[in-house]
Length: 245
Image (cartoon, rainbow, N blue to C red; front, top):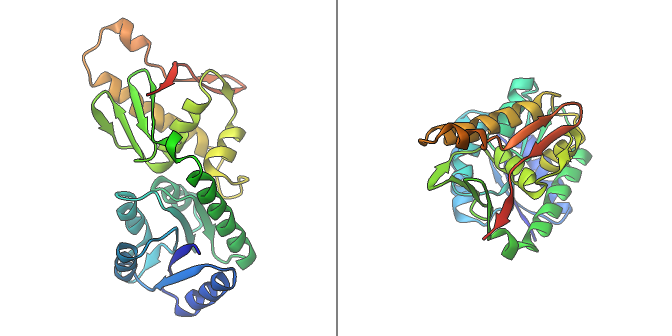
């Protein structure tokens, strides 16, 4: 039985969602504030977090950031904050999905089922994911959610890390924005602005470029560090050789 942490300060809504999840076969740990949620997360094995953002004793985004320091547990935001900047901020702190209120309980349950299927799929490939994936000066340890440039650890968001891994898995192939949306965000686009993919790619490219420029290199070496290339009208291409070790 999968364990879900539900962080929602509206007691009536919390009870309603909790009862529905329990009927679907999940064990639910209800929290009505950030402090209580941290205590539950620290004492229970949690497979999925469903969290509001605005609460009396804290902020769901800050709670997600606290969780992401130690865990890659699946995270779904359920909130009334429906502006583009709110949604982008949610994904930036590591959300796997973002649902705005008012919402359909059936849609919520469907998304929970989808995230749980991802957990089952991921558990089948542990040995492969424990290998380091390397390309140029970049090393990725997927199981630990860590990325290194040489010996320096890079501080990437969860979506940036997922995007990087997707590029590495498709090195030498041109991949479209639609393919990236489906693979990395795993949704059909209704909650994601058209600029989300190019903006996230641009941010990832900058992080990789900054890590390269931080070392003393000659100009010829710097020219070889364009990991991600825009292919006009088609998509994006990871240009460097990839190997595992």
